[in-house]
Length: 388
Image (tube, rainbow, N blue to C red):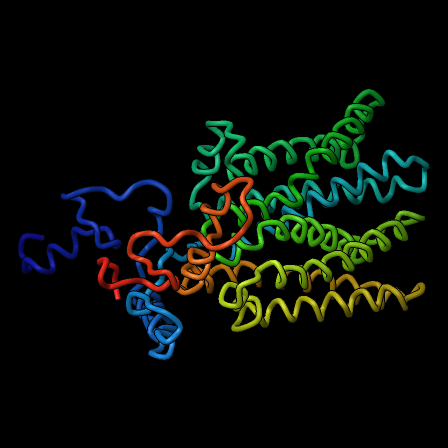
């Protein structure tokens, strides 16, 4: 090491993240991520393309640079949204079929319990993979904070996983009658806990500062709840239970597809401001959301025309699964694009939305009084020291 020149020696001492261990250690959440010059150059080139000179004509900004930090979520998070919604919806459907009674519903109940426990395990796996190591998942359970959707979601997922595992155990191993009764009680409890699990991820997105997620905070939780129900119906099309439970699952999925299609259009209406709603129509996120509607519509049509054809049933399940996956990935991609757009943030601020809107309880919605540095037209004023 001593024979190396000073520059090479300094580079060798660093830990790959441009952090000198002699100066300080990089710890905490996301500390395991490595800086990639290739990805950094691609992100810079993308920002330069999006910050075109014509963009400045829409209003002042600081060289077109974003106001917010873009979410660092990778593909595991929308996959986690999908598997969590699938597990929660199957827990709810299984509990409802169990309460409906009748020997004909038990094949459906057993399938729902198996999918619920598998989805819960997959959800935890995706979340831990994005966090970097299991200790970070456990660290979120050191506190119980009802005001934090992320903290509550961790508790809901852990509780649901334990209950759905207990409910599915007699289906995997021979069990005496007292254990089966305890499993049935756990199945009902899993259905109750599954209700918030289905839609809490929409609440999580809506509680961020990302303009398109914040502005659609009323629609996102319901949209994600119906999307979870669609994923459950599609999974049961691919793994159909015997008896009347199969028809119950088909009707459940068909109603959910109609609700998801209606709410996907309502998402555009609630976004309101054109600049905020733009990621829902343009770019990769817009293409994903349009594709989701096409796939869900095709799956619903197949549900209506199919009779006893196994091929059409499987086609409906595949189309429904792809449609709800495209919706989850499209909503997350829209959030990334919205965070990169400074004018979307400015549009909400000048309209008095977001945190300011929540602070003015009881007042009619409308523009906020112009603060220092903002003139009466809502434009930034250079005379008051704001950035041009």
